[in-house]
Length: 112
Image 1 (cartoon, helix red, strand yellow):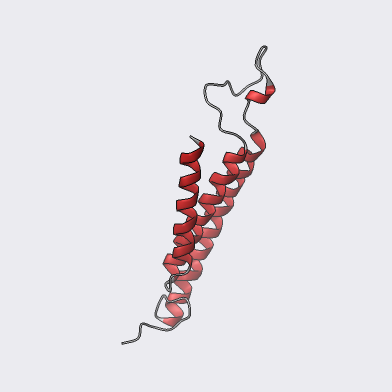
Image 2 (cartoon, rainbow, N blue to C red):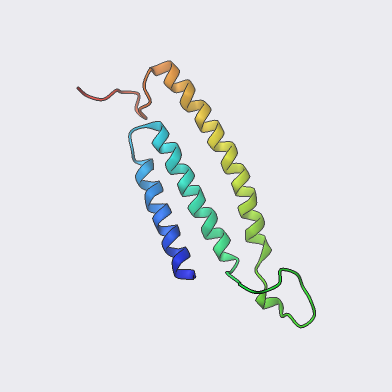
């Protein structure tokens, strides 16, 4: 399971970086979102991948078998902040497109 999660994080990170390097602002926003999701998955995986283990403390279950709740709380907070920043980026994208007339990162249109 760890190798599947590692591959997923790597693919999301590489796709996010590739999209960030694109010339259009919408692609940059999608790339930033993918990169933030990859970081969230990485932080979530730091807490440990446990299966068939109860999430609460009970008699007879060692605490080492439980998943760490701190990375889960950090990821939940990061998801909320990521939604807010994505909404802000979209508003800035719409305002910039209205002012410049195109959606390129550098403000120039395609060469013809």
